[in-house]
Length: 528
Image (cartoon, rainbow, N blue to C red; front, side, top):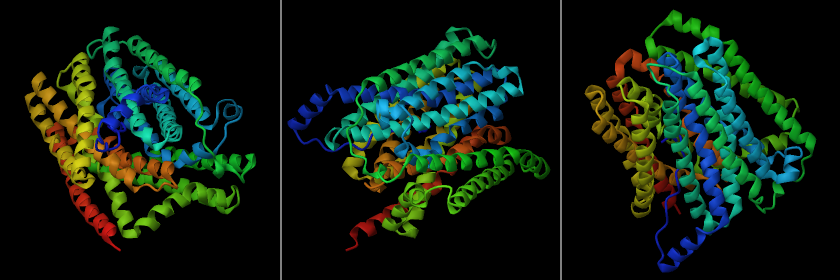
């Protein structure tokens, strides 16, 4: 996908245990919770492509430069930092909404309404109107990414708490199916609508894209209605005892101040960063290194502000430690420093080849002369179906041959299939080669995703499942999305063939990390 692709994949399936397993599976299809998860999955699948591919095509038709288009992929960084506020979603009650709908549904409803608002705000902006409109579009896209990531946190928790372990596999399968349908609607559906409303590279129409995004906002009502209809999960929340409203309020205040420090420092130092890039030069690589330093400085300032506020007593220290520190310490305690760092490096780099390429793939197709309907049919419909097939194949193979072996196979395929893009770049407008490229790319991504999700699930502790999984899934996309933001600049510097070779080469170190992690984990499991 995307993940992109950052889209989620189902856990590796378990072996069939005979006719009883089949009967239980078929009966589970009639469970209301499975249907609810299908609709919630659809709601989760809508926002992502409205930030990535669909938005990139809109901006290109509006005449926005290619390197500026790829910078908009950073609006989805909320998915990569959702672990920061995931504990707040897990602990913090919302005024009135929590009493009326329950903890999970209250946050779910709030995030869905925020998603609708963000999409409507994007629809109200014409990116061709100038710099101010691009800033407004970027802010609305950031709001969409933050709200969509919050919805993901809520749905994950809702799914886990709604049913016993025996039904979790079916709930996950329904969620994935709904998610993929949502991606087709916001990807292929949005492109078809914009074309039907007469917007193209030759004749851009803001009204066409505005109406398209308003229709996408309306599709989110599927999730809103589902949230209002389904019952709140019936679970005990012993963790919420012992803290009052003032504690929660101070916890939110500290988070808000740290987030403000990040945003403020990032934007205030933006001029200095731009001046340094102009003075140093160095092309795309130099710009990337300077921007990485710029970003890291903002993160350090935000972390420093948060730490200082905790030390000054602005928040209950025990609460802050339980919220943000204990889940991390638990991971390092279980695996040890060396193995834990190796695993984190693998998590952060495993999807780098396909995610970096995916940021600019639609712009690449468009630059080759493919029309929006051709891209929609090949990438957003055919490609999604192939990725679903790849996910099931990866899950079956992981069950049969082991997760680490298929993790290695997925890493090899994810890197090597990028070379097919080189052939397409030289061939130009060739529909058969486009479909071959899309098939290979999505099959590899689906297979790798299935094995990777099974791998991440095996690393989490039952005591901190939601927070640790949010950390892993956030880390998985952080660096690839940051690099992906510069994909347009890299292409401007070395061309499409060179860029695709680059995305293949950055996947090579992942093979070594998978091999080392497999050895470390095997030795750990065999130790007495």
